[in-house]
Image (cartoon, rainbow, N blue to C red; front, side, top):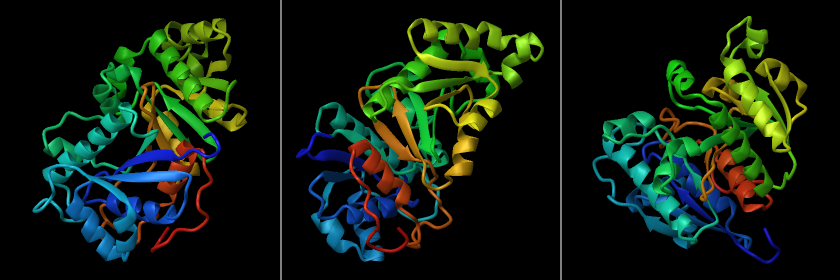
Length: 326
């Protein structure tokens, strides 16, 4: 961020019945009084008001910029409960924030966690924020990928919320290369211009020369050759265990959901950032769920969201958070 400018961040509050409204308000309180970050909340006004009252953060809400989403939740607002109204509200808030960012009103979106079952109950086809960003931005869904950042690792996923069988059916050298390219472009926006890339294999040991399967020879090896021809500094394809153990790379390319999620969640279970990359709009959610078991209790930590705002806003995160359980 250029000195003297303000980073404008849109914050959709996720599932209203989860911890999203709570951590969004705690994040606003943490950045209160700062002149380098401007935060705008997207979510049902009654949910934000009631949550602010519960947390004793009415003052933070009063000075925050709020763009209520529609419809306002009434019967559907029950913290800890999974229901269709809350699922629809989460998608509505995120959609409005993405649209506003695409129009240039904001620099990035930091989204609170959604609940996929609640969204499914609302009859909405949804497989995560990357697919939503793609649809709102008018791009193919397979052009937007998930980049997880946490525990000193940055891992971009070629496939995400789908069965392994389905993922294998649509893998191609170009899809793998596109994920790596999207990761490189995003790292440049985060200040890393020439990253060292590690490409994980599809099979153990990346197939061990065909001993453990031929998929790597047909997919990841041609992708690696293409990326090297384009000038990228790339290792692999190789076994993900070996690559991660080396900790020698700036960007790791995982083929499947669990290849990338397990190491991040192990090293940074509550403080990871999940960035949807490949579209004009940069959206990051937090690397944890909606925590229905503690929703409405005022004990959720907002640290992951606070640090994600700092990362996308190119600013320093507050050392402490106002309110309970930062």
